[in-house]
Image (cartoon, rainbow, N blue to C red):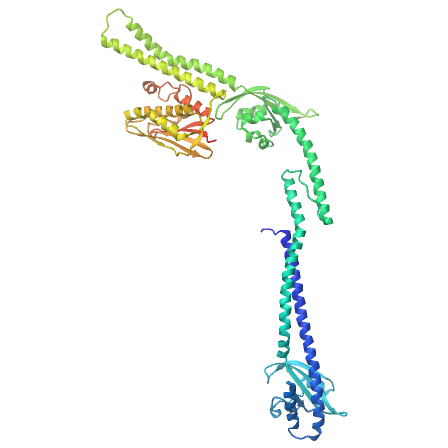
Length: 590
């Protein structure tokens, strides 16, 4: 349920209380006024009854029939009230409005009963003859000590209501005006009460969000002033303590951050106590999010977990090497030692990580380069050697055979030239990318794809293959246009070479989240799943015999991979045998 603001709670309470008080006052005033009017009417009726009693006392001894009735009707017209004269036995002998002979005995009426006892009787009740509520007042008619009769006068209560109507209307109008004025005053008072509380709440929220410089202005109220002073003191003390803690933390962070090696500290339960920025970069972690979590949860590397476990147990090696797999392999050299407290108790382990990826990579590159280049050059050199030996023979040679050997030598030399050119290109891309010399400028992806497609129009037409480029004009990214065109060209070259005649190749570009995806999709024979993880390695071929027949050097996809890395991106492939292949280059859009 949505909670209400204190202002509206105070305002509603004040206004409701005032409205109830005003309504009660209006009801009481109306009720009192009605009673006052009834008392005034009773006084007037008493005066009229006394006049009627005096006149009746003068005529009743004569006992003339109809005299009392005529007196009632005559005085009733003059006084505009109903006058009735009743004998002690209850018989009505005169009435201003009805025939006394047809009226019932009135002895049991409460006002008559009181008058017969010598008192002034008064009653308010509904009259069956008049069909309305009336006020009755009766007094005894005496001559000396003798009770001759009872004189009663009555007046409809509607007369009183008519008199009160105008007064009540004025009271209600006044009540509404006062209610509106009080509502406005109450709203102002509520704002005055709630505004300091709202200011205190806002400052408390700022303090809770880390703004320890926030302060509350002192309100006029003593209670709220004490609350504001206490909150300001709390913020000041928190600021001092946080400053001390921050300074100490920064000193420690400066020491660890200045280290080129990664530092990782864990407790006995293998939960991370601390890791510096170098270690966080190695494992692609956020230091704040990693602290307090287990090493198994944060770093998915079995060798690292085993090394930490062995270091904690004190039985494992103090040094070791592990490999971290991601966009690229990272080789780490580990040095582990046990952390102890002042009592020499084992409280955890400290691991120092040195990134030796570059050394390993240089060693691997050198070894692979020698092995692969030797393998790739062996075939053309052997073929050239055989051709040279054959052509060097002094015996006469058929011109057709001579031309065939020369053509073979030309093909092998072209193959060696393409191999050297790809090696130099790959080496240059790696060199520039490692030293961040690859210049990236905002450019339209569609233009790059179209230029790459135009370069292979003739080759595609020779195999009746249609090239389609689909890329919205608004797709842009920081790119090196020449390198990216080379990468797309290598993918198109492979797609055309391995596609069946009369098929279609689609080159597409689109935005995907915060990245740009470039896809080259063919309808070729596809690639088996076992080849996909190694497809972008140097000199790796799915079908070595066919690749060499089509003139490939085995470096095209490796060049694509390193161009994607130079753009801080990745390249992937999705393929199934008989379903074609889709190569995707994904680079940041910003």
